[in-house]
Length: 614
Image (cartoon, rainbow, N blue to C red):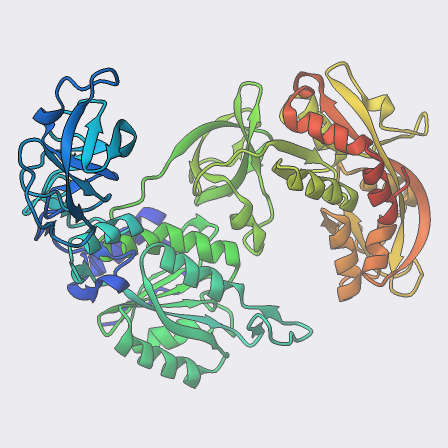
């Protein structure tokens, strides 16, 4: 009997329990693979060395094979003389002859030691004249010799079940002559992206279309956790096509994954097709991002429909599917790494669901500081740029700035050399690009001039880009400087109205509160509040994009961005884009490198060429 759950929301833990109860995370069956195709696979059984490595005693360097006792007492003042045999021990050839007392044989690195020899004298400790070898330094038995089985001995366990084969492992197995290995079969996953609006990267894009980033994102995420992706692509919003794709996938795959079509709108076909063919186990999890995930059983195989928004899709993948696939592929569960941090700003959440906030981690005066990314589940860059996430429990509606949180790292934490918080500018992008070529990494948080100034005062960044106008003095930035920070002169840029037709009519697109551009806009508008005033974006490029796309008719941005977008520009004001540096951080190498760069004539020319006055 089918269990109809149409957005019948369950908790995150309950959803995981339902899925793993229906599909236990047992390793896949073993399969035999050629060693050449075993990299990255998980061994299904221990491997014992079938031979000794090396299989004979061999020389570790060029020199002369000797009996060690014949060299005892040798010194530069009193060398020992041995008779040098005519034979030479070459690599890959068993030596002909035996080392008797008082004799020696020339030997190459890696060659088999002749019978009777138990040491090798280095060339630099000898002198040869005619057939006589003078040895000026004594050696002990075993010197410069690798004995048979000294690397790996027959019967020794060299790799264990559960090990994931790296290039080092396959090299060891090749040295043992092993040509094939038993590994855990990788779970096969069929992945589809659904929607008429989707195009593959490289194809023409329709006016209201988007490129399919989920297909690439999820396919590579699947491979990262040890799954084998066996095809997929884009499926249009056609019920028959979806049903045919599902039926074919069930025959070939261990898991079928769709992205998109999980909600309860009229166009969400994936859910309906899966519901018609099987049993819906979960439809909706009290989770943000990722609430409308679907977990189902069709022909005793798991079918999962991930949300269409990129951050929701990848987050629910890592939350539910990645751990299950790791275990199915024979891998151990990934160890999550936690770091303590303090929130930089207040956060609000909806009671009744667990919310995961993606965050930047930056060094502050008293440890790490967590800055939320705040772009929402529709953002493509949010998960890619986040350092970590932290969970807000179901019963919490507000977390205050300064609260200690436990941040779960996404990958390895790499703290940037230079942390920049504040206003965004294409001129700043140019400077940081040049700084990167000089070996310094940076992290930019576009939080607006006011937030950047406050972060600098709290020593939560190395640099803040600001363009704050003080209306009482009509001066930029200087009136806002306090003892904790230092103002560094930047450059001048032109702000103005960007539009398609050169007029300031119709719907506007506004900038975010706290930004220097928003202060300029409000001063320009006075008490007026045009249509679109409450529509806020966080960068100059986003203003231009809204006007180009037709969602707005005009907005305020810098001249270079308007020109690059093909928009008409009406000048409003020149403003000073300067930099605020916390005095406590001024001597950091990356800060000094930035300040040096800013003063160089070539940098001034680069900014001038980009439309900025210096």
